[in-house]
Length: 102
Image (cartoon, rainbow, N blue to C red; front, side, top):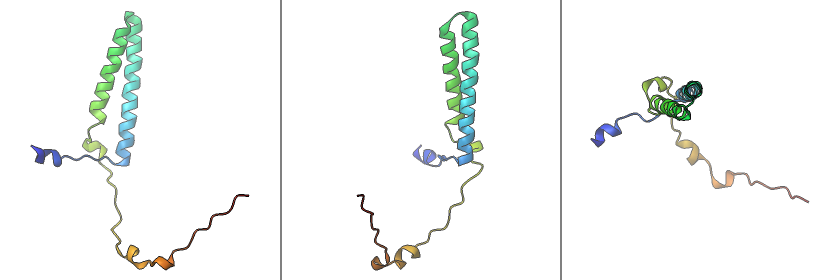
């Protein structure tokens, strides 16, 4: 069972995060407007709350898991450079001097 969980992707790219955020806000806004109108017409505030909560649950279902639609633009990382750390000597560093505040 744990092998299946470790094979699931857990990341989103930046464009996917932006899309997920826009979808989340849009669904919440639409459900709030529909809930307010229906609650006003029915004269029941409880229906407003239920509709907004249903919109929240629906938006969480669509935006929280890393669906493939959110992983279409993966980042290209630079290769690792090990030699940059070893080339510097302790004497090569510049000493930072702070200006005195008078």
